[in-house]
Length: 174
Image (cartoon, rainbow, N blue to C red; front, side):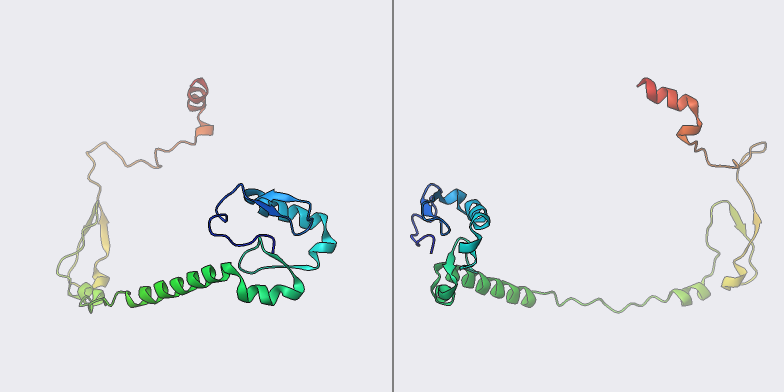
């Protein structure tokens, strides 16, 4: 194993660790993951003989010893504890799900449409109706509420900026 477990040393970023690919390399703990990647590329022959621990990628172990390492890896307990905690929290979340149910709806919009006693309000139109059926709610007369001499515009007051040179000039002066 590239580093031995010591609770006080494991948090020290300046601790020197021995490279599993080249025994002459002593690497600071904070740089160790980056060094492993670089050295693995530089030493493919050694890399093919080592396996990576599934609990801690810093652990490079000879392939023949990986099953023993997995059963005794110190980081295994941390991962297993995380899995247990996550399972517990998921179980609590499923128990804490809301039991609220939507109350039954008494509305019937189709029925309301047939029972409607007055015509619906639509701005700028007048409805003439003899009975209350939806088919009779047809607009028979259009009336605008503009003063005499006024007319409804034929288009929206929207001008495309690239078609109006004054607007383009104003934007270019800003």
